[in-house]
Length: 498
Image (cartoon, rainbow, N blue to C red; front, side, top):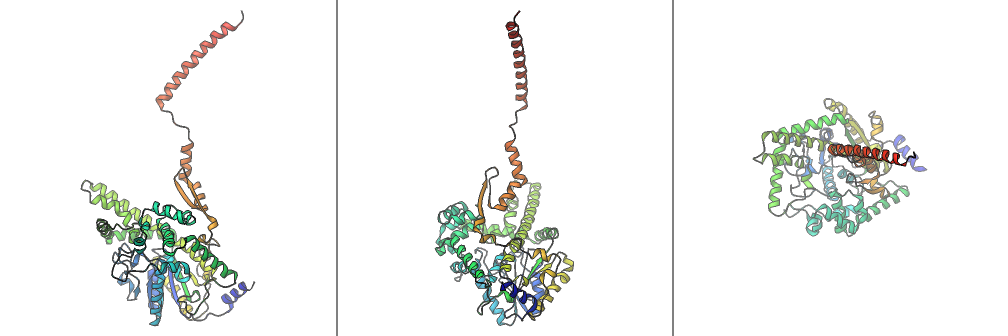
């Protein structure tokens, strides 16, 4: 009864105070201008930037990883860029959180504003919301301190983690059937992670997540916000301002396609060849990497592999090479578009729900980055104005009034995080299409899909009879009818009384 009143007073009557330990976070899909906005904010408010993109943490390969160039950085210090060796695994969430929090404290000690920007949104969310149990698990996985670039410590201790996806899933089904049914059978990363939690923590991942849900539920029932500000907390929601740079889907599609073309012109293929050589070296050294993790899942490597095969084959014609190149470019564009959609989906299905649960949606502002020519006016100027008010403790306009589309985009499509509802986890397999769905929505979507319905029609269609066989049957049938008629006449003549 009192919580809605307190929330109303906080949002409408109580004046804001300057944040105690301010942090600015810039998020959004790839290609929307996040990095540019972060630099503009840093230049205006004496900030330093922390990278929150897993691929940009890898050394070298600036085109494949789409790193911000030194010129684009405009002298603003950037952290966690190019600090991970190519043959290292990506950081787990707990590792990223500890490293990022340490850098945030260092930036504050210099009297500067920490600004986090990046597209790996689960990294971002880990800084805002505590998942203590998972973080305790991740403490067992640290980056190398002895100069050895290999950090696949879990795989060394537990070889099953380096096995095939089918073998890992079978082991997970043995020790934690709940999580085994939670993931799609081809989702190696999540299957591997669930088994890794069991092997390193001694607890089933399903039990770990259940404890997290219980803690959240208890916190809400006690009437407290899930993230109460604490004196020793590095980042508090009350002191965090978030900007979501968004662009219309068709506009972003064209922009991303053009960016891939530019990447090819700037040397994308050469960088993919570098990765291919690294793969060959590690394979020859009897240390083949896990191609479903780390730098190997960067967009471009898998997509250009067929083209690399054609250019090294002396029997391949120039025409075939051109076709392979065009196909690889198109596949890279498609993968980039899909990645952008996944980034937006995470914001809408994960982050918005978490912010709403914590009563902090008022700290998230949507910015329209659709028009590149108007970026300074539509995005940077708006963000600089809001950020100035935030840092000064001034009353800010409601986020839903900043843009006409904000009311729709900043409203969670659901009232719950699917990961918190094991009762909704399902696993159904379509034997007709050999497709597995792990959510009711995905299952319904598949049943209504054109491909599924087409295969059903083919399955239920009567078998086709070859034309020659049809002719033979027709001819034979005519003969049968003729014989039957003759026999019928003969029988009639005999049976009819005279």
